Image (cartoon, rainbow, N blue to C red; front, side, top):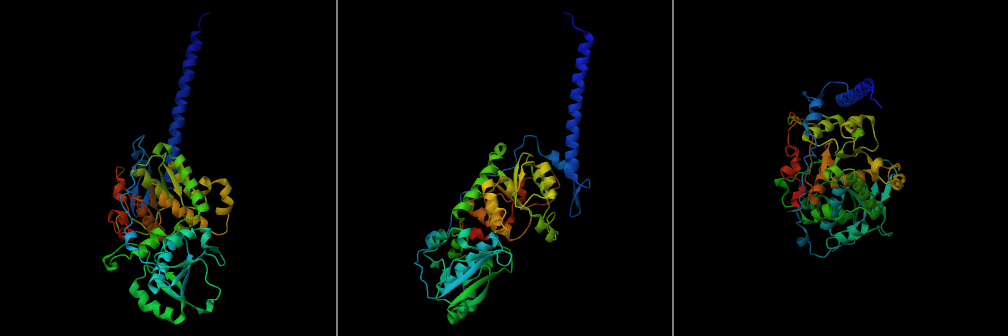
Length: 422
């Protein structure tokens, strides 16, 4: 049977047309991806400087798995050998509440423990209050009460409830500045305690700065213990966090199971004026587009897994997902059986706690928003030996090193946590 030469030529031409069509579609796809990344303008503005997104997309070498750093497990707690005295308590009680989210809880528990210790008083486990009136939870809804009591047993006495014979009218409310000192307690709080017998501590925050300074002197080992050795999640909530981290690591097989957590919340960005900090190329907060460019220019590949603290997906995040398709919020990685309890509650307390602990455990943490969440997450990460905290900034070259953007808390070792770990 002879071969029709015309059919052969037609077949070759058809194959050539399919190849050309595939190339055109591939090129159109890449062009559309870059157009999405550019948004309404051709470039992204960073305080007057202009950085081309197109450059950022091609700046990382093909196949580069990202500028990951290894964890540093050389640091150890400095306080255990200094805590040998048995706890001694008076008949008086110190009460308090945890408010505003987990980044505040760490400071509030530390200040309450310091006050109780120096007054030789008994500490009562706090309740947990959300931002809305009537939004209250017990301590044990979120944290491990037995762990806290056990960890502090050689420092202060802790009870789960205030005795019935103690009237709330007999409790004086005392405002305490965060990082309260022994001298402040003696001068301002002890006279009230001696007069009333029981006090309620309300911590206020003159500053969200957690840098250690020469004025601080030596950090009290009790404060270190309270800050880094007393709070742990209760079993069920901890299991949810662990399962979410495991799912994120499963998505990250090409990068060795490593993932990035970005504290980026749309509502917070809308309320915050993202202005220059006075440092070249630096601002107080960054949007999704700016974070995407920052990470891409540092060399993180498009296959990198990213966890966002944003409660639910928002269309303004699409540009980040275009460049990093494996970008997730809580609902995408939380077990379906747990969503009704932890995501559909009117209170956001559970979600805030989940964000804080995942951000503390991620391989890289990027704070898109400055504030106490950033500061206390860094402290928790120092305690865990996870030093890769990258503070966003304008990058003028696509070959910049990730180490150039390590948080000053870590690069200068000036975080309060370095007074507690050595």
